Structure formats: C-alpha cells, structure tokens
Length: 325
Image (cartoon, rainbow, N blue to C red; front, side, top):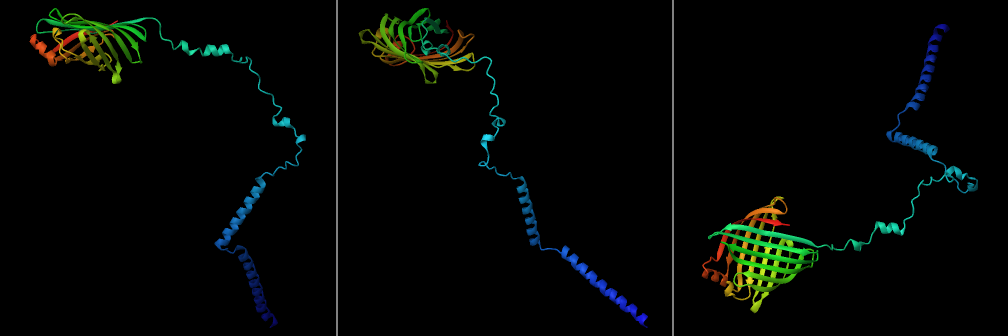
C-alpha cells in the first residue's frame, strides 16, 4: 500500500519542482529580453553615441603643448630649416640701371613734337567739267593748290567758266594761310577778277576747313575798289556709297554789297549754285564723274541777265574728272 501511494506523491513533487524551476528561468529571461519604451531606447542610444564621440575625441585630440616647460635652448633649430642653404646666385648678375640707360630708353619728347620743316605741295582740280549748252558747249573749272608746311602755307585758288569758246567768268586768288586748329585755316590775300567786265582787284580774308559732320566749308569776304564788297560761301560733303563710288553734293552762294551794272551784278544775294556729282575713283588721284548742276540768279542780278538775253536760272548735266597731284 505504501508502495502504491509513493508514486503519485513523488510525481507530484517532481512536477512542482519542475514548474518552480521553469518560472524562475522564464523570469530571468524576461528580465534580460524585456522591451523598453522608445524614449528610453533613444536616451540610451544617444548616451551610447555621446560616450563613443567623447571616447573618439579623447583619442584623436592632440594634447596641448606646454611651452613654458619647453627648453628652447636645447631645441635643434637646424631640423626646422633655419640652416638650409640659400638659393644659388645667378650666373650673370643684372647690372644696375645707369643714367645713360634711362636716356637711351626715354629720349626727350621735344624732338618728337617738332613739325616737319620740309616744304610740301598739293594741286587739285576739284572740278574740270563740260556740258552741252544752248549755243555750243560749256566748260568750267575749279582748282586749288598750296605750298608750305603744316602751319604756314601759300594758297592759290582759281575758278572760271566758258561758253561757246567765250570766257564768261574767271578769277585767281593768292592767300597766306595759317593753321589755327587741326581742322581750320585762316587765310588772307588778294583776288583778281579777269571776267566778267573789266578786271578788278580785291583784298580778301576768310576761313576754310572741316566743319562738324565732315562738311568742307569755305567762307571768304572781299573788299574792292570804290567801296565794293562781296562774300562767297561754299559747302560740300562727300558721301561714300562704296570704297570707290562717292556722291558729292555742293552749294555755293555769292553776296555783293552794292550794284555793279558794268559787271551785271546787283546788291544782296546775287546767285546760288547747287550741284550733285557722282564720281568713281579709278585711283585716289583720278576720278571721272557725272552730275547735275542748277544755277539761279536773284534780285537785280537776275534783271541784268534778262536784259542781256540770258535766263535767270539754268540746269545742266555735266561730265568731268577730278584729279590731284
């Protein structure tokens, strides 16, 4: 009987011991594997990172040098480069600059600013043309030239007109010209009229040069015998259509102070001539051209022409050449 009851009690005791042993083991593992709250995990993670960074900084940061405890006298300065050899001297030393070298490199400027002393010359026939007139043919010329330097020149100017082998107008002018600017000259001299009528002499003074926008301007005042006076104004412009084809408009006006019936001239505005010429420069010195010219008389001058059987206005087609040398 005792043997039959020992088996159940022994099995029960063994089950109790086994259950107690399993619970203790489970509690031990749950303690080690329990899940922590997220905030606590982040705090632990950041603390681990901070601890790792501090350990890294402690490992990498150099230790401060105590300069006070260093013995500078015992240091070997040769190891720091103070006793390194200096660069080698150039094989050919550069000589010092002397006054003679400076004078040769920078000569005095006054020698370069002097004007040319030699004489120069220039002669040009700006207009040498012909046309078909009512009675025969007509010819006209306008020429100018000078000799001298850049500042002082002797100028010669001449213009005239012939119709049917008869000279209707011709004059010759001689001036002393002085350059007053890079673009303007002042001239003074005399003028002699061969035609029309009896010959006459004039004193003359004027200016000539290049106005703004490249207009070539010429203005000359004249004082003659018996109180006669005159003023001539001329302006022209050159329009480059191509490098060789040039269109040249021109206008010229004559004024007189008093009537001169012997010469068929009235006071005031006597005549105006406007022309348009197209030239082709075969070379810079030689250029044939064609053009159209309109001339008109005003006031008493127109009346004098009508009395002579001439028209007060005239339009003609011209052809000619422009040469200079």
